[in-house]
Length: 317
Ligand SMILES: [Zn+2]
Image (cartoon, rainbow, N blue to C red; front, side):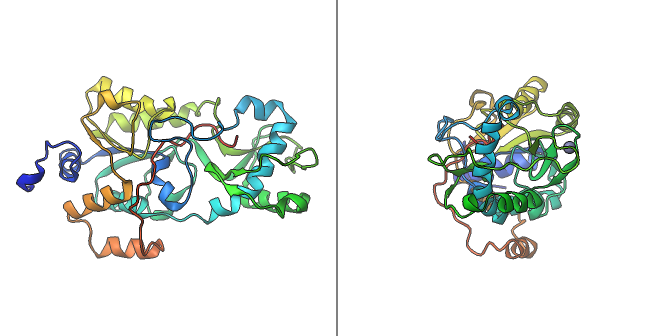
């Protein structure tokens, strides 16, 4: 039972979330950029769900324009190292702990950083793909982003020596540079255009991936959204489906979301703090959890007022 001061029906109370999870143990969890900001990966949107930086590059521009690709890969060359170094935080660890305890039926993430898997989550669908891989648009072969980094650095030593501030999704701010001389590696097999294996803004999520996620939602008790403003339809669609089926929806997010009118429960809190509190209330904050946090290298998780907005479909601006 919960304490009288925090009745389960009280909105925004940590006990309300614990009660929600206990009543709906087969959770479909949808995560967004707010999960990874505490790992040092910036996000695109502010608390109102509005863009706080230049919008990411669109798929159509990337495919059509060599100049756009030069600009994309030059920025990515500088942004990738920090992105690749990011490690899971207490939010990722808590979700892995919830899965191990049997509460998570499926986790679908809009993030492209692979941090849920690093933290130990197994039931993960990377809705928007993964930034640690590249794909040839002509022959379809996949390669590793780490190898691509080697080629980018080798071909562009002058750019590799520049310093830039990291942006979302392995981007970096490099607005004043002249990209004319930037050499973009092409597919070693066919000479085709290489693209990160992520879904760009203006690109659709592969249909089999969407169908699999929708099927998993159909078998779940409820939808829990963590760290997403749901501004992108590919994520919001799961709220629409859940609403149509009468499945309850809880959202943990700092700031406004697109689904605010459809929610059973809304917690406007920092993800790390709220999920750590949830584990305590579910009596899951045990030695296993401590071990996971140590393994993740998270000695002192931050509980500051981090913004929490959705990862965008588009990538580098
Ligand atoms: Zn190819």
